Length: 415
Image 1: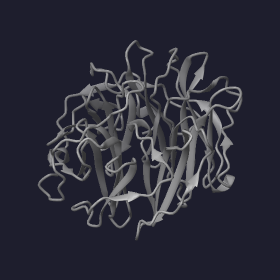
Image 2: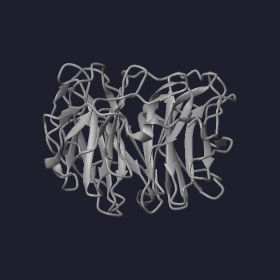
Image 3: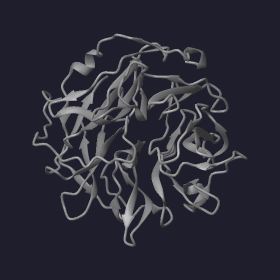
Image 4: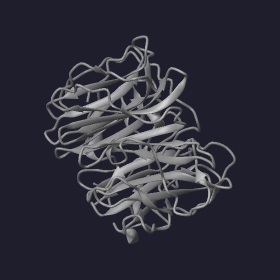
């Protein structure tokens, strides 16, 4: 496969309350370019699902019925260890839970709770993120703490024992959309949006800042960050940090991308990466999603209603984020709204664009570097279609994990 582009359609500002179904968990096998490659008039083709999508999903959570919050995340270690995280409130408090597989995802052990300072905020678009770099596991989350107020937290553990320490934290009263991850050295980063005097701004902290908040330098760009829209933070194969957010200039919204040098703890060089000029007075509550394919080209997907209805777009950069290609629509034949995209390149190079749409998340697939996408198809488990999906590569595998509208978490290896 060449591309898997996965775009989430999220109804604005609506969280999934996720009452878990009665389907039972199982660990058994049976339930289981360059810029020139992207054109503004993307063709769609009628293609069948990859053979791997015909294989069975397996349920991996053990959350009691009605306790699930938000979605799930997945990460793969170099040795084939697979970790899956989610949030539920089976006790008197909401916690992050993990399950672990030591056999490339064939079987999973019982869930374990991750000790956190507060109650994780677990809307699917701000769910805790899970990463593995080397032998280090990282979880970042936005949490409610007594006050009430919100704060970003990050926790790390060794893969061998998953004994998470007290972690690092961002400032009190973080507004929204805390994200983060582990850089290629295994160092923990936090990124979030807050309201200083003058308007919403993107902040980040990491070992280079002594975990003291540092505001993004907008490099003279007008306007402010859109405070309710998720941000995206990744590292390239060369170790360059890249961050993207939705920017607001007099209620006209476009995406901005900033980058850093390999191994850097700072981000700068902010540029407008899109030009759809969506005008909206309100809170879109959906943001961009970055990824890198072929270890050379940055790509970004997002949703806006500049054409009159919510559509998912894609743009690419072959010069490290300095300039971006004209955006194009991923799934022009899809009739339902399309929001909050999540994009992923598979182990073999296909691009999956998942498009969250009214209680499901269809996937549009490209096998030709994004020149064309098949019409989106749903990923269906025994408990219904997946509604929130995340992908991971590692140890020669590509896997998918997602939550159904009933609230159960399902996993499958697709390569």
